[in-house]
Length: 319
Image (cartoon, rainbow, N blue to C red; front, side):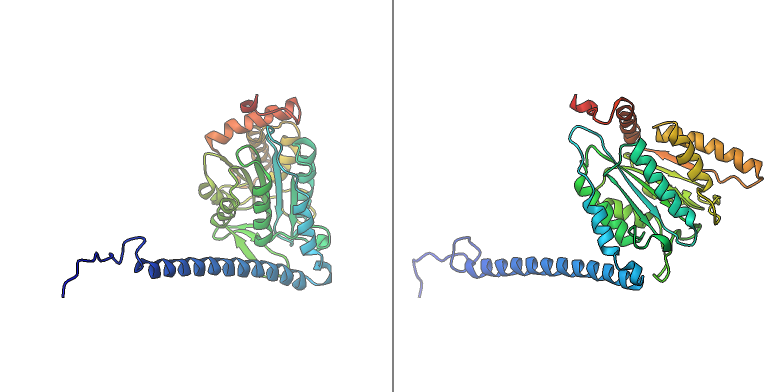
């Protein structure tokens, strides 16, 4: 028997039939939120477990490692509005030679003095002699350091200078070794992922290792400078026991950057000096490589001007 009463469309908003669908949608949304919280907690637990495991694996002298990293990151000062600040991270990755530790510590001191990074620099070092002094150079520590810098810096204004020094291989990238931790290789794709995850825009990345030219292509952006100690198919030199610097480290940092604030001009000077030294020693040229994105070339010129005129000169856009 027919009826003249209107029938609600089950899909019409406001109808009684639509209420169960809305409730189901809310339950799904709540479930998704709960799942995301659970995942976040699990990731945090894994990070904390990883840090604790690292400390335990390194023995009694490594017990302070979580505290050393926390102290280093908590000490990072925020970027100053209107001032282009530079943040320095040194990554001395292979514990087999002291030269990588020496480079990172000496270069960090140089940057704190000449490039205004005091309070904005971190040294991550794999070396038996610094286990109770400096955070170790692991992927977890590098990622945590970059993420913290990405949070405290003014992303549109400040610049990261990342120096990585170690042995390198033509197949796998940068050697990261500290016994008894499991050794691994840091490649350009892994490094790019860490930088992107930290949302750091302005990047100066210098890699000192054999075959380090392989890092150039994956790291190229308009806001990035990448310098390497060797071409992708060439060895670099100077990592012998007893050395204070590699050939590239001495020419670029200990010589050229003590005379100029320009990372580009310093590279040109260092490349020429290395070529002369390798020629005199009859070594195959290492052929250091440089890529400079157009945007960061302009940005670095502004930063150099700030260093020459004084640490508190405001950026051009703020004037």
